[in-house]
Structure formats: C-alpha cells, structure tokens
Amino acid sequence: MKRLLLFTSLLAAAAGSLQADVKLASVFTDNMVLQRGKPVAVWGTADAGEEVSISFAGQSKKATADKGGAWKVSLEKLEASAEGRDFVVKGKNEVTLKNVVVGEVWICSGQSNMQWSVKSSNDSDKEIADANHPNIRLFTVPNVAQDEPQKVVAGTKGWLVCTPENIPSFTGVGYFFGRELQTKLDVPIGLINTSWGGTRAEAWTSKPALEAVPSLKAIITGWDEFFKTYDAAKAKEQYEAAAKVQNEKIAQIKEENAKPGAAQKPVPNAPGAFQDQTKSQHRPAVLFNAMIAPLVPYAVKGAIWYQGESNQKRAEQYQTLLPAMIKDWRKQWGDDFSFYIVQLAGFGPSGPKPIGTPDTWAELQWAQFLTAIKTPKCGLAVANDIGDEKDIHPKNKQEVGRRLARQALVKDYKVQNLLSGGPVYGGADVTGNKIVVHFSNADGLKARDGGEIKGFLICGADRVWKPAKAKVFAGRPQVHVSSEEVKNPVAVRYAWVGWIPEANLVNKDGLPTGVFRSDKFDLSTKDVVNPFVENVAPAPAPAPAAVPAKKEEVRPAEPAKKAA
Image (cartoon, rainbow, N blue to C red; front, side):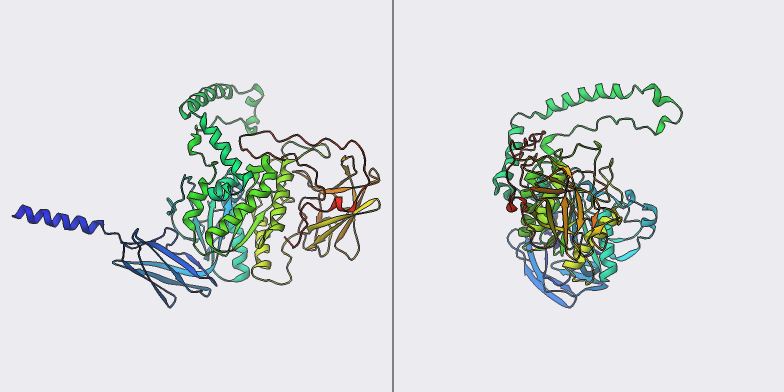
C-alpha cells in the first residue's frame, strides 16, 4: 500500500512538473523599451486554456492560451516615459520584468558594416568610456541560421542598459544612430542589433517573399541546383587537402619579411574552418527565419539597414531584392514602418579605373538609391565621402549613425531647420551642348571645398564617357554639365565608381550627393540572378553610330518623386 501511495505521489509530482509556466516571448526581458504611440503586441506561452493577464502603465489586459499554449494581447498606445516600471504577467505563476521604459525602438540590421562594433570604430576608448546612457537600451540577436521560421531568439542575453561594460561589442552604427536620437528627442531609445557580417539580402528575406518574384525565385533555384551535386563529406576532404598545401606555403616567409621592421607587413592567414554549405548563413531565408521572425511583431518605429557589399555582383537584381525584403518585413509586422538605408561607403581596392569602366559597387549604390526613392517611408544615408579606399570597413561609424539619424529626425520626428540628407538626383535634360541636372534637398548647392564641382561624366550617342565640367545654376537646384569633348551629349553620370574622393557636390549642410545616372544603358550585372554565377555580364559594346539626342533619353531610369 505504501508503495502504491508513493507511486501515486510521484505521478502527481510529474504531472505538476509538466504544467507549463507562463512565459513571455524571448524579446521581452528586464530593461526593455516598449514603442510609444503604437499598439504594443505582447505574446508568450502557457498551458492550453490558461488565462493570462498583463499589467503595465495603468493598463490591464487578459488573454487565454490556445490549444497549442500560445497567447497574445495588445496594449493600447503608450506615452514615452523614462521611469523604470514593473511589467507584470500573471497566470498560474507570475513573471515580473523590471526597469521597463517606453520610447522609440529601432531594428539595426545588415552585414559587417552594421555589425561593426563600437570598440572597432574611431575613438573607441573615449566612446566606450562615455557610454553611460541609462535611457539607451541594447538587445543583440546572436548569429544563427535556421531552415524554418523560429519563435525564440536563441541565446540572447536580453535587453541591457547602455554602459561602458555593455557597449563595446554592440553595433557602432546602431549605437551612434540611437545616441543622436536620444540626445535630440530626450526619450528612451531601444536598439535591436540583428546583423551578421558577409551575409546577403536574400538570407534576410522570407522564402515566400522570394518565391513570389521570378527573378528572386532564381536565387532559390540556384541553391537547389547546387545541392543536387553537393557532397559535404567530399567537399570537406577537398577543402582540407587544399588548406594543407596553402598552410605549407604560408609557413615559408619571404626573406625580405624577415628583415628588421618587416613585422608590419601583412602575411596571409591560413584558411578558416570548413563550412558545410547545407548549414550556410548565405542560403535564402535562413537569417530571416532565425534572426527576424522571432522578433515579429515586437512594436518598432523602424529599421536601419547597412548591407549590399555581398550582393554587388548581382547589383541589378538588388533593385528588386531590397524592396522585396522591405515589403516582406513590413508585411510580417503588419506595420508600414520607416526604413533607412546606408548607401555603400566609398571603396576602391583595385585602384584607379579607366573612365567608363563597369563598376559593380556603383551599380549596387544605384540600386540602393532607386529603392530609397521608390519605396514609401524610406530614405538614404549617403556615405561615399567617408569610406576608405583600401578597407571595406571604414571606421567612421559616428558620421554614418548621424546621417541615418537625420533621416529619422526629419521624416519621422518632424524636426525643423534640418536637411534629411544630401542633394537628391531628380532628373536631367539636354539643352544644346550641355545637360541640366535637377536636384531636391539641395539648399546651398556647392562644391564641398568651394572650388570646382567634380565627379561628373557625360557621353554622346557613342557611349564613350568623358570627364565634364559642372556649374551650379545660380538660385536654382540645378547643375549644368558639359564637356568640350562631347558636342552632343545624351547622358550624365555622377560618382560612378566605387572610390571617387574627388566627387564633391554637397548642400548647405555639407552632406554629399550619391551616385546617379540619367541613362538606361545595360548595366554590367544585367540578368545576373544566380548566386553561383561569379562573373558579371560583359559591359555593353558602344553604339555603332551616333543618333540625334532626344530629351527623353536623359531622363532617369526611375525619376525621383520625393526626397530620399
């Protein structure tokens, strides 16, 4: 009888342990920032049929967990508050989150230039020492790739208060953006860092969104074809054999590198660990699944995006891919939130190029510009003047953050007497032997150094590009462009090369003009849609014969309808 009672007690204890405690989704933790001025979704898990109540800021909401144990409520719009308050969830158990504030929440996403840390940015020692900002809160999504959409942010440390201890590894661009907003708005700022170096935009886009567009579905098809013949074990064997040979070569240090002072010369690193491509972070949708989906539908004001380096060989496709990703995220959240893009910073490791040479970096920058002017509630932070010729990771993340903040301050927060960015290309017309280029956001249009405006090219019907002289038309947001070598111009381009420090057209705030073109000539990346095709399409051959210039020939491929 005693044994029966003991067995019954053990069963009861086991049954009790199987009951699920009320839990919040992993993005809800101590120190979090809730978005002001919007309904705030709150969700989690509990026992099926369990009643759950949420209490915060004078509001109380209730929900009942469904058959799968999921529950969700929506708090009404909240007012900004820096007062740290308790956020209480009650079911069969009680969960209390501490130090919860209300303000502005922004997603910070992209590849390495977004992931680039504060400790690796300019003036890092001072920036870290000064990073005591109790009203800036930080949330980092660890780097994980998954085949299916996830509900949990794997391995997160939760929301952290911005301190010198917590800031060093956080995104520099995101932090400097948030710090500028916090200074100007004086409300709590929440920053969600979900970024991964070297990644492609298609990895951040859901599979249904990619499948809905033929030119983007080709990315999925490319991977499917690759995996038909991919053998991970064989690939690892080949990789390790090649790595052994390369390591032997690296071990042979050149005689001149053994001389005094030669230690500063770079020596190639040995290959890294083998990566099984079936687990690659570059596959379509895998970062959306693991690093975006678990955040949905946490209320946010918007997103900032610094990515594109890994998509440059398919730059024309990016004209479709980036807008599709933005549309996808907004659909997932059910919110047409703001989205601000960093146009790739200047970069030119291969040195000077002949005039008119196809440039995939410029083509990607052009795709970013088109996305910004065609997509509602979008904007562009131009960074071609703060890049680094030999380093794809320029260290001046402070200015990148400030330029992104300008976009938000003007467009979202309606700050007056501030330009959102640099001059925005708005079209071009042929007038005799010159081309008139129109701009918006161009108050005080001028050369940065007060000298001649540089960075323009024009061509005739032969499509041979020539350097051009440019002058601001007094009192108008226009630049007149001409060249003695082109008597009958048909098209104009500006800053159309990855590294062009001489490009110097700015507005009164000293903010630069981004890359643009008036022509509709085929790009070198035209029709390159498969990620396994490494070589871009050949550049178009010059037109065989000259034709009379027509005004419509120099209209932009996509006319700017609003300031970016």
